[in-house]
Length: 445
Image (cartoon, rainbow, N blue to C red; front, top):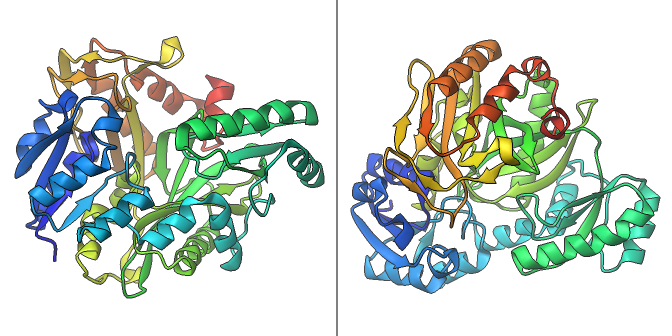
């Protein structure tokens, strides 16, 4: 059992982990940058330590400072949350070498699955369908062009170490491939320190569907069903839901079983997400594994009734899973809207500033995960997400109605937020009918 955990993150996920720890009787240490010095959630931690200035590289991404904070406060383990160091295998290895637990997957599994090419090989070995594409890294334009003509345009160039849409380019012909190939490599090098790219067939108008999984150290694996994350803008998710509105039970079972095969093949431990593309015929193709808890994990919690953060902590403390697959039942419909400090009317430009007026929604079936409050200053240094609104109802129509009501109640002023954009999407006829894909936002808004 863990007794003391350092939370190496900020914002709503830091608060989420602190709360889960306290419910399990685990003490918490919060780290913060100077920009977050007045964060209300710091008062809920048993101890809080400043680890540097606002710049991420000198604070939340500064491994020596985080390790020093962990050693000084004598913690058993570090929970990295999502983003920052959550999928950094080097950080996990340093934790191990320092005798500090890491609340996440093993180092080898993280390294393998963090490499998109190796992850495709694991999926293929597990007999899970993968999108046609290169077997390894594409090193030059000529090689990319030859493969693109073999599998047929359109194709997508992806960063091996990528995420969040960076280092990705969709290409429709030989001419555009040349520019896109070099642009993707440069962007990948700048974002991840690794310019390696690979190439896949681009599935036209797919849905993005992912499966939440959890595995323990004894080889037990469970899925918590799927989430549909097709509502995206520039590969950044905006609205997520569970269950996927177009999947039949038999297809859902096949998808979830495929996700578990990938996890078992990779010898994965702790919580993770296996991501797929779903084509117009509801055929699914593996794309990657996110070796961490994700922003949208509350959607799975609401439809299954299980706390995924607590499971992460219990597994990291050496406990086996107490559930069996038959104990996990998908009930009702859950939706999540990400609320970002961005101006939808101005190309979603960031809107940092002080929140002078803040009133969160409530009522039956409404959950708000946030670290913000009246008087809180949204700093320009970090991701612009300031809240997540999650609703759970018996039917999809009821969930949409509840979400619309909740967003209309939500007051955050004077800064601009993505609430109007989410309301517009929720009111769109095609969204209401469940007829969406990953290009829905760009085409319709």
